[in-house]
Length: 456
Image (cartoon, rainbow, N blue to C red; front, side):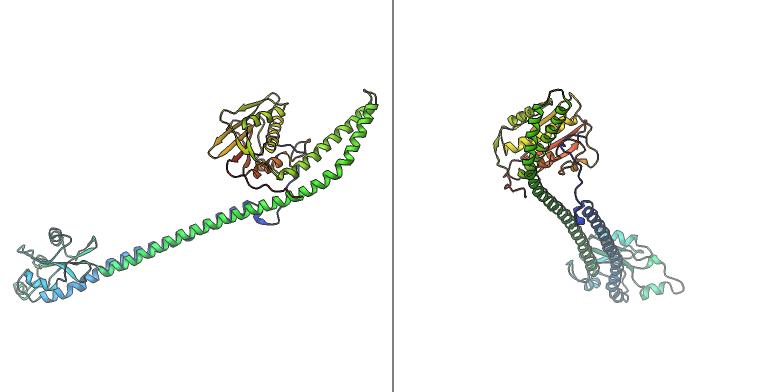
């Protein structure tokens, strides 16, 4: 058995009537909820992202249709002009303006490949040089360029009568066609993409909200399970307290009479006789039962504390001296000069921890006790040289009456845990990386919780 137990009878805790008392249940539900939320969130984001991609594809087609619609009346009006390229005066009526919020064409540019002449009207956000380059590079297809919220569409003007007369019997070469480029703001496509982006943002926000909600629910389940466990433990402790008081008071008086008569009988018998040995064994068992009654009452009375400033180093030294059968290594260089606690009750806690550590360690192996301040917390650590804990034993050792040893009461660590919690602190057990078991007591400096009766 590793350190930190002082008990007699191995008594498993009674099962709770609520499934939430099992810590695995809320954890499983919480993780399932988080996983389901992640799947739903991923599906929602994927759907909205797909919608955004579809909206962008539809936006490209919509921009081309909008450009064709804007270019159609311009081509129709310029078709009858014999002058190629059309003069700027013929282009200006088709320019709506340079305002990016205004519907219509903001810039018109024409280019005649055969002569290299150009004309333009309006104001270009892409720049005249860029528009000229794109118009010159345009092939048989009608290129569409969208950049910085501006669209540029390049097409060919229909041939006029003079150009048709030059090629009466054959097709007009492509290079003879005058090219026209219009620059415009694709408002409809921008609105479509903006709506899709808002939908994506709403989907992402909904996913985030789902994650936060599921995390909060999982945390609520864990907190509810913790509260249920604490309530179940308090009920068990209250029942144990009531039972302990009844048993202790009913046993102590007849036990004292039994022990006294046995001691008197032993004194009247010869020293080396078998009868005296048997009588002394009765006295020994009576003393053991008397200690059990004392520990039961101690367990019940551990519900009150009276904190005051205490010398921590002196408290640990006194506790180590009380465990006379063990060699104790004290590490007190970083111990605080004083700390608010119930000195008598904490001495009881330390003696229990040190005695259990000594019993778990091999003969002659020292027990190490360390005290230091970590932030707002006083940390007391007791380490033995024993075999350590088996899996799951780190929490079981604090259950009342839980032990694998044949002597003791099984209440030492239960009392220690109760006293530490009344101080607003925690006690925990673990296997030390360098071997042996280590119990840690953490006591806050802040306000000590109001003392409570143990119940019973």
